[in-house]
Amino acid sequence: MAVTIVGAQLGDEGKGGIVDVLAERADVVVRYQGGDNAGHTVVAGEETYKLSLVPSGVVQGTIGVLGNGCVVNPQTLFEEVDELRDRGLDPELYVAARAHVIMPYHRVLDGAEEDAKAEDDLSVGTTGRGIGPTYEDKMARRGIRIADLLDPDRLRPRLEYVVSHKRAVAEDVFGIDEPEAFDVDELFETYREIGERLADEDMVVDAGRFLDERVAAGDRLLYEGAQGTTLDIDHGNYPYTTSSNPTAGFAATGSGVGPAVIADGEIIGVIKAYLSRVGEGPLPTEIEGELAEEIRDRGGEYGTVTGRPRRIGWLDLPMLRDATRASGFTGLALNHLDVLAGLEEVNVAVAYETDEGRRQTMPPTTAAWAACEPVYQSFEGWPDVDWDEVAEEGIESLPDRALAYAAFIASELDVPLAAIGIGPDREQTLVLEHPFDEA
Ligand code: IMP
Image 1 (cartoon, rainbow, N blue to C red):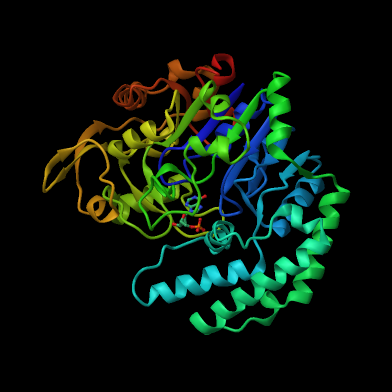
Image 2: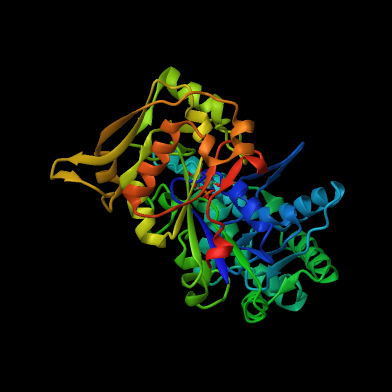
């Protein structure tokens, strides 16, 4: 039985909070794509956990798995595990033998490529974590996988090949020279030791087999998507995307279970009540000026990974219609309704006006999306109330107009609401239909 959580927008929809709440009833929480570019925040009472690689669900004591579709920076992995241990948690965490490793040269090349693109106004605004270059090596079949770290005889020749290739690109294409990131002897020693720690801690598994056995035993799997649908390498606004597939179809490929495991379960699209974007690329519903600042500050819209201020926009229904199609949402979690409280009016883009007429969904090219003029429907704003009280009393005590806004989105997408988020705390996620009861 599986529940899959997918970002319906541009990342930062509050997936971490939803995963944290649902993880309480899950046996295993699985990440299937991305790496430490994700920023997941879990607030449990006085404690705030900021995780970028380790699945958010482990904060609840659930077993965590980083699937083969992930790219893993082992330094981040150990830092996060050590910090959780220092704070009294004991995460049981496994990493797929088939997952690819983010190496120091990937991060150097990520930065170099962004700098080079900036000269021609082509930057993506990546998180600088080496995500793209690692997936690039995976596809080119020159990557280093987690299993390679446990086998020094295999690691050494693979490193020798790939590092000479990478060094040539760094020097000849980008004109950079960072000896440490390209020093085979040093990389070999460091990563062999990392392999030893992974082996000592029994962290490496054949993820597909591990999860298959769990499914057969009747366990509840919670799939934690990172980033969001409009950042998907295939379904997002290429090239302003990440280099993996956050959409639900990849939950199977990125973890090694059959697609029916995902499709037979529930697929929850997480939506923020407005939009934010960190990084470059168009945003047709972008809001500028004081209003954007107000929403940014109220919503704490600064990157968890990079600290960058996020751009702000109104909710975009054409984007959500595409996200619903691409992942087949069976339920929605609508977050941050509290952030919009107190505004006189709240707008929603219900369609786009284009040179070819009105359209209900996003065009397939980014240039065409950038040229779309949003058609807005306005809603009267709702008052700022005591959200802790609402959290205690439940959905009936939500301001009527906030509830009407949520109901409008669900009805437009023809997908029921599974949860509503009215604050960052665990207690402030109102679960209407627990997906593990439905699955
Ligand atoms: P990369 O994933 O670091 O290559 O970055 C590619 C694009 O995805 C950039 O626009 C990033 O800002 C964006 N991105 C990556 N991870 C996240 C995330 O967790 N939240 C929001 N945006 C993200």
